[in-house]
Image: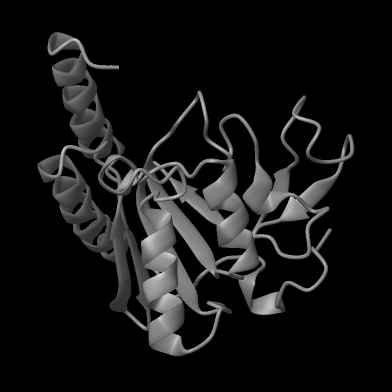
Length: 193
């Protein structure tokens, strides 16, 4: 069954609803939007830019998560985790990247944009992705403890919401995960939380 409001050119395949998460009525199938212009080489190139942003967070002593927003094959927003620096629980990498992109386009609707982020977005960030009306989300490492784009929750593809965002997971996942693992190993070695 084709999802309501999804342009026909995006329809590529039927994907079953996640089982046991309560996000979709039992047995419902939905169609994921498909971006004909994205390639795996582009995804890796932009994920490397997000990894550069994660490096900036690491240099500042914060959890190394980075994000970039891409519009027409150009980066229009960048961000990295700044929770420790700003003492702000909302200063996740996605937030400044989305804010910068919205400022660049002079619109909160980022309908033709793709967000690349090194770690699967949390509930807050997944909500921002949906509210920004992004065309696509690409993330590197999955977050089984707090991920809200397929791991723990599936907010970005929840049919009860007014917008769904197609998700590509696992792009440069090993590189993204290694950076996070090294950071947390160092934190434990130092006796930090």
